[in-house]
Image (tube, rainbow, N blue to C red):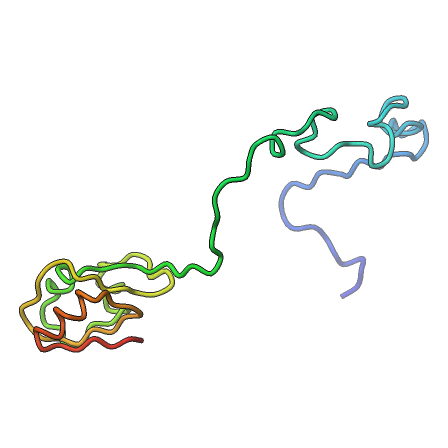
Length: 146
């Protein structure tokens, strides 16, 4: 491949404005910037949020709140939802996503203890609430932390 073989992708391509190449081009002398002034200079535009020297809005307003970057956000499921699954002895997060019970697994799965379970099964998850562990153990099932 040679440099002369290169061509733009298929579709409309706008020609670039070549400025400062003589008066005959239509973009010569002041290069479409007008005469003098802040906007005619190089680097002459102020950034977003500049209010003419007045204290900008983002600095006038107080800072509020805190976002923990290390927070683990679990997809949650209750035991009443798990007990609806018939014919499964081992329940994993992948099975729950596959069946459409959980839409997004996020950082893992946490099982909460709302509802009752009437048959023993093994459930694998990243975290369990204390009440969920107690109910799973009472029914004769097993809770495995993945």
